[in-house]
Length: 477
Image (cartoon, rainbow, N blue to C red):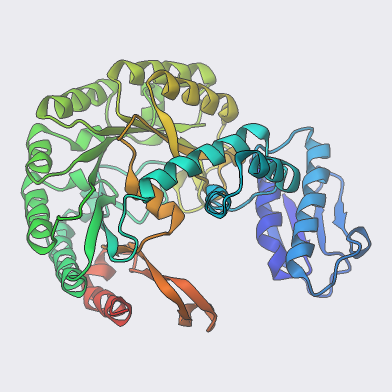
């Protein structure tokens, strides 16, 4: 176990995640001791103690916490890099949205050369990742310029059911076998929330719809028809640019369900294998075969879907770079319109997070292979984010062919437009034109308000009126 002691709460986040990035298989704990003699102390039986002292940070005003944090991060990074004999591709950046900085600089008129030099020198990011961040930011901006940022909004609809729960999953979703008697009541509660939202936003322009989960296609064809008909009735589509449904699990997709999606004007779907290795699907609890992935994909094409995304995960237990190469070869044979490559992030709430030390492959090499395969399929990177506790501190990247990028995916990262989210565990993000007092943030002013729906399925059903009331208090703005 590696232990961290910080003299301020402000130092903990970056220090913890940096240590975890260099030692992903180690258990790491942190605590704050305000009377500690060092800014930061990192110690373990396995590694020599690391101390960041006041004497090591010279010429900085003690009240300048931001600069002190930066100096701590740099000193700790170099110390850990020396101990482990390796570097992190994203340097001292521990946040989940590395492209936000690139987007800000792009909007300010900074040149690519200026940005990459600053990113590399100041934040210790590798040249390759600096170029990637800039490239992604440029494509994001092109897509976001198509949206109505003043009157527009996006709608998220959450379906918290899955055929089975994958071992790496920490979402607030449940296996259908355990929650099947709640489905009818859940859909009714969801329709009630959607009805309230549509009334509150009747003068706004809906730009994108995203139905996610869980696995939305876990619902029966009749329930899907009921839900999509409700959305058709309540929301105008005059400004709609994208309508996505995560078909997700191949074992939840059939011709009848895909016909329902097509009939209701869904423009983009995901068929997500995560891996094309049967041994891996069995280990992570994906109760379907590789052949079922092929079948679901071909069926979707036959029905007429011309924008299909596929998700894969680099670093799944037991997989090697050779396995990833084979997975990519099989995906290339299908030629999807976009490919999202996730680096495995082991969350405490997942079953994998409760297990000891899964054996992870060479994620860096796997993501390189995926980037090359995406390029061979005519795709370019269009969005990028990172998850906390991602093994090796790597990133998730979305690649897409021309005009096939997922606009909603960019919005969820860049926070340029309000996303109104309905369903259990759904998180609404309100982007306000002016800063307002935020009660959830100790009275501080902010221009981004988050409204969280309760996660438990039964609690959402029982408290949906409360979820609606929360939205009513803010959506008038």
